[in-house]
Structure formats: C-alpha cells, structure tokens
Image (cartoon, rainbow, N blue to C red):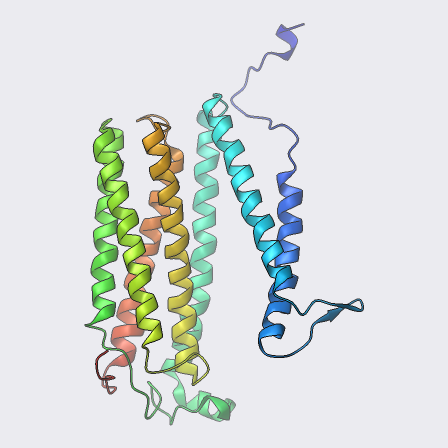
Length: 293
C-alpha cells in the first residue's frame, strides 16, 4: 500500500490551501477600499449597491488581509522547501515564475516611460490636446524649475550602485559558504536601501513642483514614485532574507529565496539608471535648476 503512494516524480502536488482564495478577497477589498479612500480624501462619495464605501478603513482592512496572506503563503513555501519538496524541477519552475514576475514589472515601467516620452518629445501636441497641461510647447514646461540631477539624484544613484555591489558580495559569500560575509553584505544592502528611500522622501518634500501642477510633475512622480515603491518592497524582501540568513535557512545549494531577492534588487538598480539618465538628466537639460536642489 505504501508503495502505491510513493512519489516517483520530481513534481510537488501541494496540499489544499486557503491562500489563493484569501488573496483574491483581500485584493478585491483593497481595490474597493482604494477607490473609497481617494474619494474620502477629496471630499467625494463612493457608493456601491447602496453601501457607502467612502472610508479609509476598507483600504486598511484589505491591506491587512493581503499582507497576512503574503506572510502565510510564503511561510508555507519556505516550509515546503525545508521538507524537501523543492526538487530540481520545482526549483526551475520557481525561477521561471520569478522571471515572469520581473517581466511583468518591466511592462509597468514601460508604461510610465511611454507616458513620459510621449509628452516630453511632443510637448506641442500636449498643448493642443489638453490645455490644462500647459507646457508652452517646450520640455520641461515653460517657467518650471527642475531638480539638479547632480545633487540628490546622483547621490541616490551612487547608493543604489553600491547596494548592487553589496548584494552581489552577499550572494558570492553564500555560494562559498561564508556566513559572515553573507550577513554583512545583506545588512549593508538593507541599510543602503533604507537610505535611498529617506533621500528620495526628502527630495519629494522639497521638490519645486507638485504632482498636480503640470504634466511634468505627474509623469515625474509616477515614474520615480513607482520605482521608490519597488525599492521599499525590495528592502523588505532583503531584510527578510537577512533574518533567514541569521537563522541559517540558506545553504550554498538551496537558496532560491535569496536569489530571487537579488534578481529583484538588480532589476530595481537597472530601472533607476534609466530613470536617472532620462527623467533627471536628459529631461532637465537646459531648464532652470531650483535653488538648493
């Protein structure tokens, strides 16, 4: 009887799980809550099936459900790996999944870059189509002061490039079973990620333009803000890997969780280089630089 149930393949048939359903419920509540939250902030109203959803609490509930689902689902995945279910084939498929996830993120950023280049390369057409996004037929829009690309943006570029170096150091240390180097490299990467976020927050607070002021502000904050969000997610991802490294979860042969975090972080690095050279450097060429920025 035992032989009939013996696994003779490399695939892992997972046990019934509540996480896919709970993730769907959380995402749905989060989406409705996001709309209600925005309407609440601007003094509007969001009514669905006679229920008034104009409140920030629905968004908070959805966020808690999603975060709890992420914790529970990924905890189960880690347990499956420790139980030996992540065979050669399963590990390969996990890598395919991460690659496809990063590819989907590339498409997100392609949309922001498309919007930016559409308005920056053809500012005259923007003027003709939408009078509310006045550019004066030039880019950056006439009368707008921009950030100095050689000040805080360059500083953040150096920070991210250094973080890419430290996470690579940590990866090589892990492969060579150097636990101290792994922990040190990861700790430095997390610190650099946090520092990047603080610098960008300071830059946003002191920016000489706002999101709603012009199409320049809208495209700038959407592209750089979306990247900043990814930096925060990547920093959390690496911080969890740091805790797991301290706990001794990773080995030179089994460490896909860390590898996925490193891939994600390198992706964030590369996107920032494109942002820096296009939005900060090229798009501000010849424009007046705001004092102190």
